[in-house]
Amino acid sequence: MQPGQTFVVKQTVTTTTHDHVDAQRMGEVIDELDTYLCCGLCCYSCGFAATCRNCFGIASETTCCCLEHACCLKPGLSCLWCGCGEGKIQLGLGCCSCALLAPSTCCKFSRQICCVIEHCAFPCGDEMPCTVAICGLAFVPKCGCCVRLNEFTEEQHVLIHQPLPVGVVPPGPHGAYVPPKDNF
Image (cartoon, rainbow, N blue to C red; front, side, top):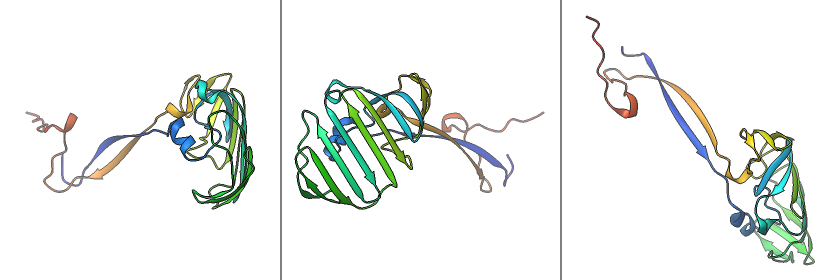
């Protein structure tokens, strides 16, 4: 290899999402990622609850800019009372609340009736990823049948073309030195 030539480095970046317990700690009434994806198109998706603890009750969350409305009749979750914290001011009546919060999205909604969960967000994000699926066959965020949204990993293979510094020999497989072949 001559100085100034480039070589390709392959990197794999893996991202995982939070689990059901983390979502409930953050004050959410619906854990959208604890869902088996049934159908979806870009920012809208629906599916079925992946765990029994997330399978019972009725709940909804709607956010538009800096306003949030939530209703929750699910066992095991704390009531929606008045309070401040987590970047929002909330007025609640136990099963229903309205809140003023710092804008983090344009609009999003989530609904759950027993084990059926549907959600939509614009723009899509980590909490509600972009999906493409029909009849349980998912194509995005990954291909598969009955993809569980909180277990998907996103692998990106990034090719980096970097010039070699003068006098540096590129590494071989697994970082081992590979001497250049002589063509005699």
